[in-house]
Length: 188
Image 1 (cartoon, helix red, strand yellow):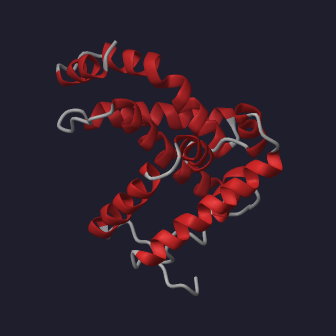
Image 2 (cartoon, rainbow, N blue to C red):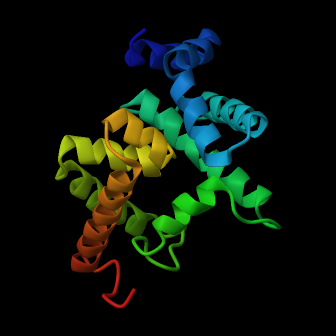
């Protein structure tokens, strides 16, 4: 079913909208949650919470891309759950992902600064669009979907070391872009 039809089901408050959304994007949503959390039960709960959030937000919201909308919510809920779960313990796979991006994302980033967040998001989106399609896919699959380097290497037909080097270079390029745009100091 097309996204527009699923969205219309939400607007008419037809409960089948949730099932159609899950049928179309559920596997991706589960992968994002599992890759972020590393725990199937927590991932399932986060996906359920995300579906409830979509139900509560549509209407009035009308997302342009329903799949991206769901995945963004799943990722946000999963990261929140991860932070809660790791408040007392460290060392999960997602911690590694977030630490890899630490030198690219400005310190003190505050969600309440929505305007600045939108501007930063726009800069990152322009940077992503400027990448070679394979590099863009690699970056998004690693840092949005949380795919493991070994899995990415297999999918791209490369050695894990080569993928790690490519990801490092992409992070460095993003960092240069953020410095140029004034989101980071050169010292960071």
